[in-house]
Length: 203
Image (cartoon, rainbow, N blue to C red):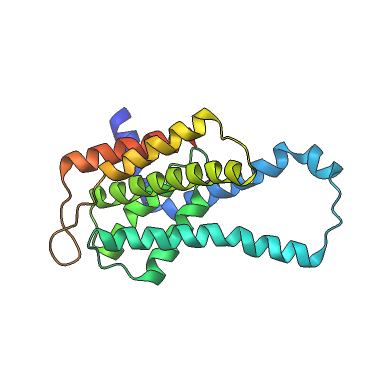
């Protein structure tokens, strides 16, 4: 009886994934201003229009660069990924990161993997390398910022840079075999899956 109920519940969730994802994302986004409602009421909302527009444009740069990196990683795997479709899928997964737990951003990538004739292992690999690239970029920016200010970065930042460099050098991107799709090695997919899960839990 319980298994039947869970099976029906899972089937309903699969059929209504978009609606459930939209509701979860809306609740996640709405929860942020609600939890900070007192600070929002006390904030000085007088804005300089030029600075406000410039801030929005600068805020959009990082997600766009990450989306292009996602497309490049798909291409490095040998997948026939179009830039516009890769950008669309990344933006959707980026929005779903605000849903509770953030797990839906991986779920939608796995659901939409057939756009690129990709396997589940390919999705895990790309997500793992994406987290690795983010770790490397953040570590280098941290060290560079301290260097520009003429100070010595914290030891932890230096260690992170060293670990990020070691990870980047030790990881090799396995190319998919065949026209647009191919199986990735089990060991590489498994290690990337663990790396991605650890990075997601830290964020």
